[in-house]
Image (cartoon, rainbow, N blue to C red; front, side, top):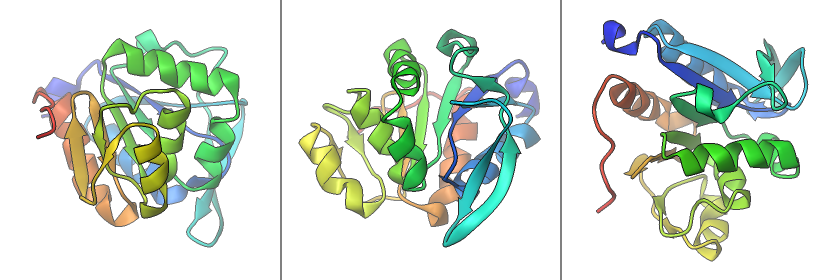
Length: 186
C-alpha cells in the first residue's frame, strides 16, 4: 500500500487542547504509510495535547492557516478533544480553511468532538455521521443524521466517536488514501 501513498499529503488541523491520541495515532499511521502530514494551526511553534485528564505532549506546527492552502492536501484530519474544536470554531481563519476543504469534495476525517468545526463550517447538513455522544443533538440540529457506530463513511466524510475507535478510523483513512473509494451512506 505504501507505493499508493507516495505523493499524498494530509492536513491535520488542530490547536492547543487536541485529544492527544486522536492526533498522534492517525499521524503515526499516515506517516508509517509514507504519507506526508502537516499539522496546521492558528499559531506557529508548538501546540499542546490533552491526554484524557491532563495536559499531554506537544507537537510541532508545520503551517499556520495563513500559510496553508486546502488545495495542497488530499485529505484533512480533524482530531477531537473538547477544547481543540471549541477554539477552532471560534477562529474565522480555521473555519474558512475547513469550509474550503469541505467544499473541495476531498475526504475529511473527523473524530470525537471535531464535528463541532464541521457544524461551524456549515458542512454537515444531509450527512450520516457519528461523534462523541454529547454532539448528537448539535449534529442533528445542524441537519446531520447522527448514528452510534464506530466509523461512518458518507460521501467524502469519515467520522468516528472516540479514541477507542482509532484503529478502525485509521484503517478507513488509509484504505481510502490507498485507492479505495468512499461509499455513500446507506
